[in-house]
Amino acid sequence: MLTTGKKTVDTEIRCAHCSEVCDDDSIRADDKNFCCLGCIK
Ligand SMILES: [Zn+2]
Image 1 (cartoon, rainbow, N blue to C red):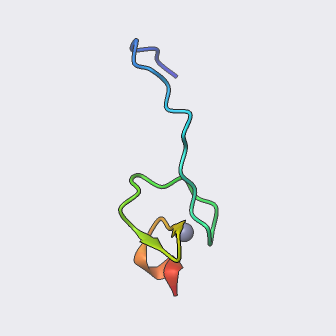
Image 2 (image 1 turned 45 degrees about the vertical axis):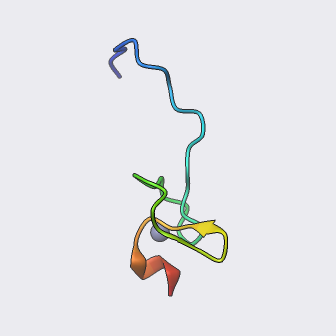
């Protein structure tokens, strides 16, 4: 892993369904985060 001087994001968002790390927090439902729309179902 390369160190770019960027601050490490320690507020990692994980999918409430499959526990995958979410790229963004735009997919939300029921106050939970999901990695994709398929996981909300
Ligand atoms: Zn998921």
